[in-house]
Amino acid sequence: MSRRQDRMILVAFADPNALYQSNPERQRDPRRLGLANFIAHAKLAESAGFDAIFKPDFLGFDISKGSVRPRPGFEPLTLLSALSQHTSRLGLIITESTSFNEPYNVARYFTSLDNISDGRASWNVVTSYYGEGNFGDGTLLPLAERYRKAEEFMQVAYRLWDGWLPGSVSYGAQGPLFDAKQIRDTNFAGEFFKVKEPLDIPPGPQGRPVIVQAGASDEGLDFAARHAEIVFAAAPDHETGADFYAELKRRTVAAGRPAAQLKILPGLNIFVADSQAEAEDLYQAQFTDRALLAYRDKLVREAPLFRIDTLELDERIPAEAIPGEAALRQVERRRSRGLLLRKYLSRPDQTLRRFLSDVFEFGHLTLIGTPSHIAGEMAAWFEARAADGFVLKGGNSFPRVAQEILPILREKDVLRPPAAGLTFREALFDDAAA
Ligand SMILES: Cc1cc2nc3c(=O)[nH]c(=O)nc-3n(C[C@H](O)[C@H](O)[C@H](O)COP(=O)(O)O)c2cc1C
Image (cartoon, rainbow, N blue to C red):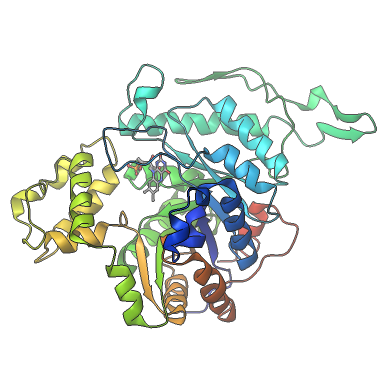
């Protein structure tokens, strides 16, 4: 197979803890969650060669689940808007829900952010599987309907973003001048939304934000094939990654889009040390019996069809603990995750301990070892078309990833800096030849 001509795309979760992972003293300091550390992290990510920072988000806070922690004081839109003022190149990926928002508000937020950031706004479109108690009539639509609503949401948002035609705004000595004849009313009336007027602010440099998506159900994959420019995937091993990649690219072409217009980025955790053994120890250190049992209890609360609540850690998984696939396909919340959990629970001779450590990172990839080993694995996923890049979620040392692993990827020529002065979209698809 010939070497790829396009470059690897790297995204990092915005994470103020990332700078202090190896410093327990600093980890206990409450100031570590402050804005200054988010800024320091974003600046390091940008200077190291990451393409974007990403803030996942959920619109609920269930205090009855002890393990759910409050956010460190910021929601994504205002946080990344602040970070845009301390960076110049990073894409800013913000999660907004199509179930608990109106398209007019969301389209306006992203146009404003695109103007604030000189063309770096990006929207992680989620349909949400939780939070309904805080919105509207308090119900969550079934999965297929949530995606139908999301589809309509996108159509309205596109009309809003495309409503200002080229030439509709010019800048004179008095400030912006609008040519009302070049601005279209939205005039949308559908099943879920009605919007009459155009946006009241001119488009940003990108027009539309870069669309990101992360649903993995059938409906979610088709939605991604139609709309997404980046997909944040959960692929714990090479085979799953390569299958997912081929399937989603196939659906993208079937939806009438070039495969290269969609970048598939699996979530990644990195445990890096000077030797393989040391890195393994760091990785295994998180799997204390206590942590695993707490994780078992969390899974039981979230996915009650998995009957693992009374199992001991080193017990083999009995057949009756594994829910049937048909039952999981009826579940309306986190359906794709349930199917992934089932795959791991059903492995031959599986024990509860191995299952829990396998899925500890929600089915995301974990790479463990020396900087050169990890860079080699990342390049191999990229070259084998199991990934177009990665979303770095966590691990033991963000500074080592930035300062030791990324330079090796650059030496291998899979990670290449884009030209200066591009919008986020232009930088993403700068060399999209594949
Ligand atoms: C890797 C991954 C990351 C996700 N991140 C978020 C998130 O930050 N916020 C959210 O509300 N939903 C998130 N989701 C949920 C999806 O976007 C989607 O709304 C949900 O999974 C239901 O669709 P699905 O069954 O197609 O996955 C994520 C899903 C996946 C697979």
